[in-house]
Length: 191
Length: 191
Image 1 (tube, each protein chain N blue to C red):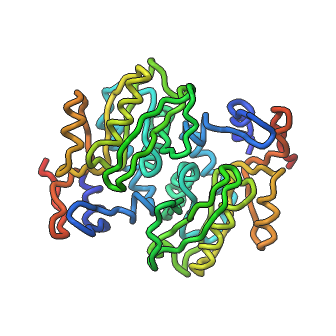
Image 2: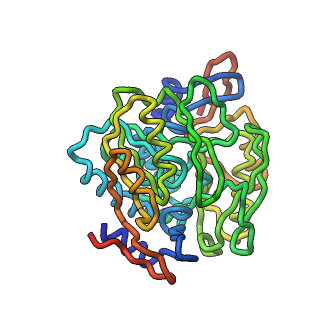
Image 3: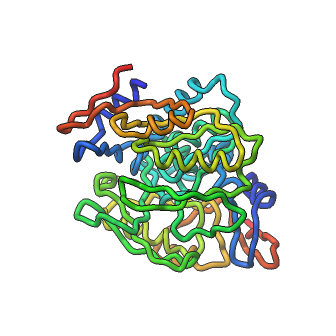
């Protein structure tokens, strides 16, 4: 998506070869007009899919998701990252390892907000090693819901996430795919 | 706001005399159409104010804020709740006590995303004892930015928050004001 790539080139910050910071428009400050454009692009990409629910993980996936939920008129649900989890029989939960922060956290979802009739688009702001996405997929599968699609705003294609998720049989649509961040230079995968 | 009150009456859950759970449309599952209506109502209420930025605290304030940012075409910034904070000179931070969870957390905001020329509307999903709002106000004041308004989706008016914030000289606009949750019955403040 060219508009997103323009934002990344203009506002992205590369502190080292592995990290792209987009605090200026997605992860701390949010450009709401851009979020609407991301949502329109997801809507167009997934237009042939049956969709009853948009799911994401708190926090930064919420902004594009609520615009997509608005455009499609379906509920948005964010899975919670929890360290003081109330893990009872009312919640699905799974443990996710964050390589970025080198911590484990519980991902939780109330059983009220997913069921086997759901057709879910899972959206996240970043994909790196795929741990968060794989965790979300475990929960969606445990709930016997259907995965209609996976949408990622920014994929770090030099890390393992896409490969691991594709090996599970899922397709991924990423709006921007980063080939390399070496020496502070942002290079995109040629599409 | 009558639409919001209708949602609270229909979908709100009162596990005890102090807690109102609105996981069905705001804090876990999000009704995006409702979020747009909340944003339109905030826009109308603050129409005479100068606004350069919308601020909130992660997580549940983000959804109404991004629609308001979209309608007003100004940036949205969410302050982060951090336990592993990188507290260097690039961030404002303050400690907030959560009575709900009985924990302290750091609220942080990058100095990049606020300055003394900003006119800020601060929005949050809930106001109870006002600790989060007061923490956000401390940061906005430390940055020498101007507070153009405070918007709250649901105010628990039987708790101290409004009083404490008003004592600091700020006005609060709450879209729904809860007078009481006693015996599982939701009563609103008469307006």
